Image (cartoon, rainbow, N blue to C red):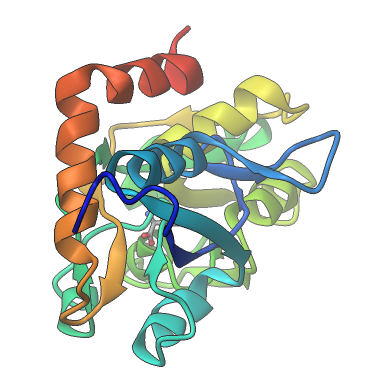
Length: 231
Ligand code: GLN
């Protein structure tokens, strides 16, 4: 591609599930999307001359939309897994994450590790690695929600005993919202890496990786990380 051809920008349709703060969320004062992933993909676009157009959709609709090429890419705090990599291609990893257990403080003492989740009511977000992890718990009564924000609200409301979800998202929700009765317990259950997903053999994979590399090298990635995760 020609980095000087800034007037003939190609449009990239990028899918995201917009209730996964601080990675993606609706800005409180407008309909605009905001968040770490949103800033990151916009910055990638600036680096490699792609105009980014975000499209909100359910998390479990992202991979089908990539397969049907309804969208050109997806950024959604999506963990790179071997199973997903059978149907889509992933960029280089751009963020290290992992699953955490959140409990309602009323259950304090009763739930402090993964083993303690047996026979408990677990709330998860549909199609996520957290949902997969919860399915391995013996006797668990799993309720599935459209996104982790709703799952955490259910936990806070007393309709679930625990949520299994990405640690940075659960911690951010506790910090910024009024989930005063929710807390994280135990160790992280997994080590996961987020990647940008693209249709198999997408011509844009190289550009996306190139953009990510440049942002990492220039310090721009670090700036965005500080903006969303410092303090
Ligand atoms: N990282 C998790 C996954 O890929 C959750 C992503 C999300 O809920 N947006 O399944």
